[in-house]
Each structure stands twice: as C-alpha cells, then as structure tokens.
Image (tube, rainbow, N blue to C red; front, top):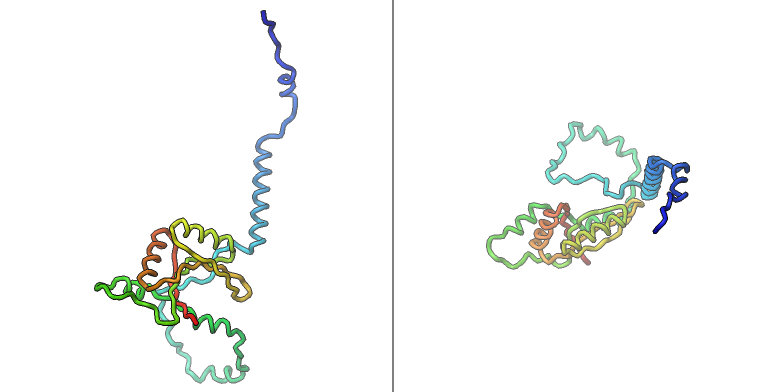
Length: 200
C-alpha cells in the first residue's frame, strides 16, 4: 500500500514570509505611468493637436471704427515704415486659397450633366484633413484615412519656427470629387478643408 504523505515543508513556510502587498505594486505602477506620460508631454511640448484659432465661415466683417481718420495719423507718421521680412508667407498666401463650402455644394449640385469643372491652368484642388505638431499624430490620421480607402500625404511645413505636419488628400480633378471626398470624411468624423492651390 501507498504510504501517506504529509504536507510539504514549503507550504508550511509560505505564511511566515512577508510579501509586498498588491496595493503597493498598484501605486508604484501608477506613479511610473504618470512620470512617463509627464516626460512625453514635456518632450513634445503639448498634446500635438493644432491649438490655433479655428476659422468661422459665418463670421461677419467688423464694423468700421467711430474714430475720425485724422486721429491716428500723427502716430502712424512717427513710426518707421516696416519692411517686409517674410516673403515666404506672402508667396504661400498667394498660392493657396481655401474653397468655401457653399462653392463646393453649388458645384456638386449641378442639375444637368455638364463637363466637370476643370481647374484653370495652374490650379489644383486638395483636401486638408488635419494639421498637427506631432508627426506621429499626422501618420495616425493618414493610416485612418487609408483604412477608409483614401490616399493621403503628410507634408511638413515650418511656420514661425514651429514644424506643422499637414495631412492632405488629392489632387482632385474637379470640385465634385472634392465635395464627394469631403462628405465621406465628414461621415467618418473627420473635418476637412478644401484648398485651391496654384501651381507654377
């Protein structure tokens, strides 16, 4: 017959050892996670989202001021004429213009089948789906667009010493294609801006 075995000695010692409580491990993990996230936030200089002002398409121009035109003239005359130092911004402003939503809608709602509204020579249409300070955020949006079947490019641009990563789709042949792509993005929760870009 088989002999009876007693409890192993290792089980008898288990209760006598002092183990670290689980709540201490939890607290240590939380502190480590907070430290890592603070480091990443400080390293990237924020959350990586475009925090600049958002354009308001329904904004009205400001009313003219009530001050007489001659009141500010002496102060302006004393100032030195400011020379334009940044030609790049002027050139960029002349090359790209945003296309208003109502112009897109009018082009898309054409009743009679007409030839597509071709851009004039030297113009092309793009959609800008986002602008980010972090290249990782721009790549994440590009991947999300790829899952929707849309091909996007990430373009980097330096503005006032800050690098911005723009996610753009296109070029599109006409405004109807731009409107269709913009509606597809909108239905997937992505706000996009139509851009008319002048080419050389």
